[in-house]
Image 1 (cartoon, rainbow over the protein chains, first blue to last red):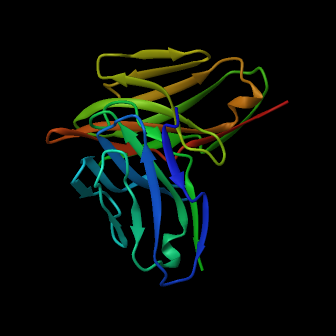
Image 2: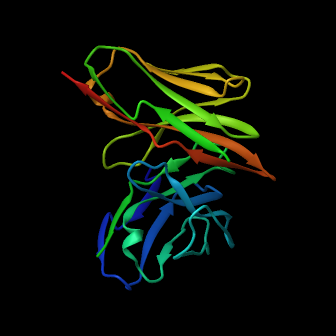
Length: 113
Length: 114
C-alpha cells in the first residue's frame, strides 16, 4: 500500500527555472493538498483540491500552480523559481475534507539558488 | 486571527522518562485537534485526533488531552524511547463554510537521549 507518493525527493533549481513536483495517492481520497514547511513555522497550505477538476488557493499560493485531472494525481508547478521558494514541500490527502486523518507524503526538498 | 502555539520549542529528556508537550490555540469555530509525529526527513504521521466532546485519547504510550474551554491541549509521552525523538505537531481544525480547514503549530522538537 503506497499511500501518498511524492517525487522528486531532492531538487536544486536556478532562479527563474520552472519545475513540477509530482504527487500521487492510491487511497481514492477526494481531498489533496500541498504544504510547505519552513524552519520555525508550521506547515502552510499552498493549494488544495476537493476532487478531480476542482482546485483552490491556500494560505501561500503565489508562485505556484496546481491542477487535478484525476483523483489520484495532484502535481504542483513552480512557474519561475525564486530563492524564497526554498523549502520542504509535502503533499497530503484525506478522505473527504481534512476533518479526517491527513496522510502525508515523504516530502520534497527544494533548493533555489 | 486563528493561531496555534506550542511549547516548549525543544526538549531533551533521558530515555525512560515521561514528558508533556503543550499546545494553545485561538481557533474558532473549533472542530477538532490532532497531534502528529514527524521524524527527521519524513512526513508527519497522525497520533491522535479529538473532537470537541472528547477530553482525552490514547495511542500506546502517547496520551493527548483537550480542554476546549481554555483552548489548551497536551501530549503526554510515557516511558520515552529513543525512537520518540521527533518533532510533535499540534494541528487544529476549524470549520469554514462546508469544509474543515486546519492550521498547524510550529512543532516541539523532542530529543530522547540514552
